[in-house]
Length: 128
Image (cartoon, rainbow, N blue to C red; front, side, top):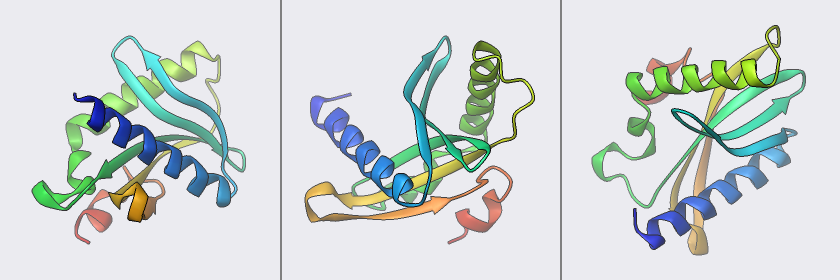
C-alpha cells in the first residue's frame, strides 16, 4: 500500500467519523487491531453497538466501494466483532454492522452513503 493510498484512506475515515457524529453516532474506537485484522470504527447508535467498515474509492472502477465488501470480508468482520465483544466483556449487547461508502476526492467533496445493518440488507444496496 502506498503512502498516497494510506493518506486517502485516513482522509476517508475522518470524513466518515464527521458524517456519523453528525447523525448522532458516538465513536468509541478507531482502527481496532485484532489478531486477524482491523475494525475501522466502533460506535454507539443509541444503545446499539455498531461495527463500521469504511470504504473510500476515488472512482467506480471495479464496481466502486460497495463491491469491496463481499461475503468473505463480511465473515472476517463478523469474527473480528466477536473477538472485540469478548475482549471488552460485552457478550449481551445489541450490535450490528454498518458500511460507510465514500466516493470521490476529499479536496473536492466526497459522496457519502451510510448503509445501516449492511449484512442483513446486502442485496438491496449492492444492486444500487
